[in-house]
Length: 158
Image (cartoon, rainbow, N blue to C red; front, top):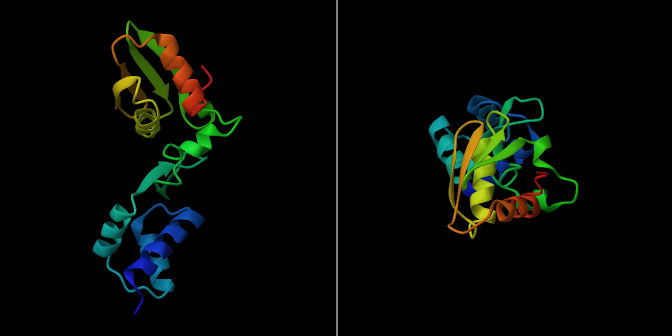
């Protein structure tokens, strides 16, 4: 009998190497690899592994491991030439101290999470919808500081 660790590793491998749109397809692939699991077990495993659905290059939603997801992989943003406009960032506008970031549909929560993690020293937090992020800076943080931090940390071209 295969161990849970082997199953989790196989799930990550399958999600990384296949464009899976639903749990049934993933369950069938697991069964073909010799794992006898139920949909409920698979669902718990996916939650433990933080597997999420995110849009691919074609706009279709597929399962990805959160570490692979472009929004939670800060290292991917720090490579020269990477620009969020290619992956979801559209614009940044200010209203007094508050900032509003527009994204492609489905991208706001991932980008907001990266912002929360990377420039928390400048912001109180973010509120994300499907394609809009409200960014709330700390007191006495300037617009330029926000712009500079986003450009540096997430390589957003503003």
